[in-house]
Length: 153
Figure 1 (tube, one colour):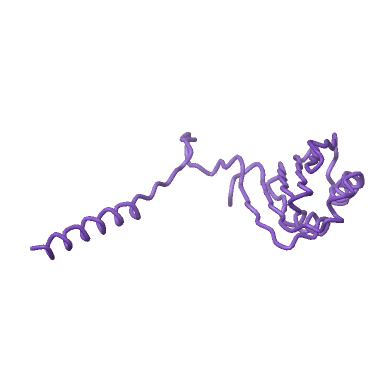
Figure 2: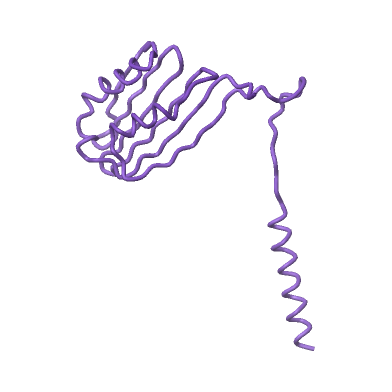
């Protein structure tokens, strides 16, 4: 079993319906209702017009946070959902967020935050570096050069 403290989901929503991006006054109401229906305790919520084509909504709740940026001229929405619960299911909420904006396509990134499954006291991040593809390219280049040199003789 994973030993994590939070689940983090980011989503890029492309080709959102223009009518869903225009009415940003009702957006906090729709999003607040969505989270309240799922039992979240909203601590604060703010909407800010960054410029005429860009608005941002930030919602803080006891169980995490939700941030969303709307780019009207691009029909694009960037969403960030962070839930401070081991058993949280941000994917369920994402589906409802998608229903608000009705994108043509979307891309999500899912992260497990505060991963304490590392054994012992070693809390260094685990990284993996793969150099095999570069080595193969270098070796292939050397082989091509040897072949060309051999053909000249």
